[in-house]
Length: 403
Ligand code: PLP
Image (cartoon, rainbow, N blue to C red):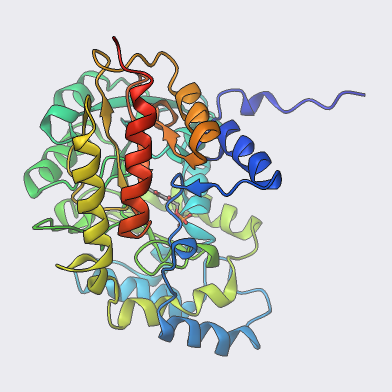
């Protein structure tokens, strides 16, 4: 008997862990050492868990092995609430949901919001979980253009043009994965103004909010629009380098009186998954309240900043490669000029690179970018290793040069 996957999965795609990764794992099993520059997972690159977080996790793990409250343990929800309250956002402890990473909460938020055919505006390029989660929830992802010529800023006119009477929500990923763009106050006002005029829920993915370079600043989207329902997503995976602990939260900000039914829906879904990993919730207050050790990594001389600079400088030295300098997050998203490089299928290009150099990247189309002319590289590898990898990518690209 053949067992066939449900049709619900027909349009669900998450290429960051797609077929190219499967090939990488096969090669690894065959004895090759693969340089995995495909996933924003700080730990394997030698980034340690901040000691106070580890200490609290170990201390609570022995006693926190029972189920917890399905929305999240109270001290964690309170810490998240206070974190936003100190930034001027009106929030009640009941408006906070803890999750097994932001990923789980993104999926729950879309399941609770969308009816079949409802449309959600998502940036292109995107973090593809958003597109996948909308599709799985029966919705229709509608991609709006981010403009590479304008440092990857969202094209507000394009967003406006794509709004229909089925549009329910606008996704904003800031700082952005994969482009590294960080939106200024004017852009935030432009985005929230569109949501206001069209009655859209704003889904604000702020998981890189503390990973900022140069003069970039970030404020939660909810501070720009206290009058709008802003679903604010964040967690510990990136800024606290503990992606494997699976610790994230969703703060429902704005006029809750209009969202009672939605909050009830979210609560049903939270109840169904029983609870999020409990020990990982015990570290939320420690993380948010303590010294922000990420600063050591992003200020001048800091490892992440040095690596961002190395990646940017070396990528842009490759003939036919341009790159908008990332202002935040852990990635670069360079462009391969089609006049210089003949790449018709970027998944094939990434696969060929893997087979030739044992370097794993993700193709640009994996981020719902419409053309095969980009790739994403994570900037987590230490400077010398990163420089060597980019030099090898450049040499490999030579084989694609139009002669
Ligand atoms: N949102 C963005 C923009 C991400 O880049 C990622 C992970 O790479 C996530 C969410 C998922 O984060 P988590 O580890 O909290 O599930």
